[in-house]
Amino acid sequence: MQVLDKVDYAMTGIFTFEMVIKIIAFGFIMGKESYLRNPWNVVDFIVVFSALLSIALTKVEFLSIIKIVRIARIVRVLRPLRIVAKHRDLQIAITCLIKSIPVILQLEMIVIFVLMLLSVLYTILFSGKFNYCYTEHLKWSKRPISKSMSTKWDCINFGGEWMLKDFNFDDFGSSFLTLFCIQTLESWVPIMWS
Image 1: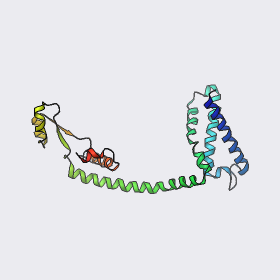
Image 2: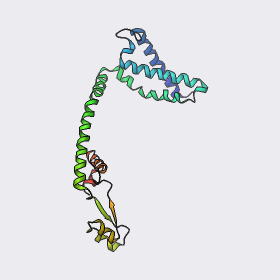
Image 3: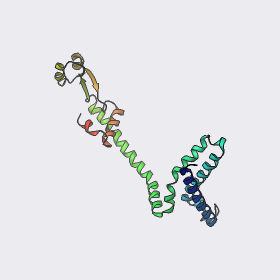
Image 4: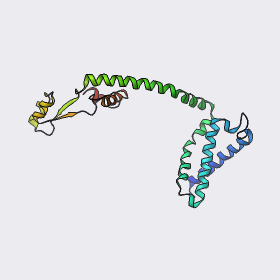
């Protein structure tokens, strides 16, 4: 048996003992102050129950290869939420965060709507303006001339390739993506200077 397994069994034993004491003190379901009436205790119960289920299923050899054991072990990720259940200030902060999610989503919908409007406007204004003539494959003497080419046909006649930059405003999707990248400050400098 590995050291981590022993620590896991000890922690599960302590958590189970604490849960049993609370159930004895408050009752399991019945009553106003019962154990499962508190949402934080429900999280605690799920974590402890999944740990006990994981230990029980690993002890039975033919069940240890089944995926449900792995799923029960994944629920261990919720163990840090037990800290939240112990501290009232953290409970208030998490509750406020959860209650603010609808307002944040409404604000995000407004931002997406504005980005959509700007995408349409910038597609109209800047469609085709971010194209350039690629002449890296040509001889050295022809490169400086490619800087003065501004139309697709001049570039093609010269022997270059008419290329489109990664971030452009040629269609709605590209405009939206470009504006989103500028808004999040991800690679906005090359976009602004192109």
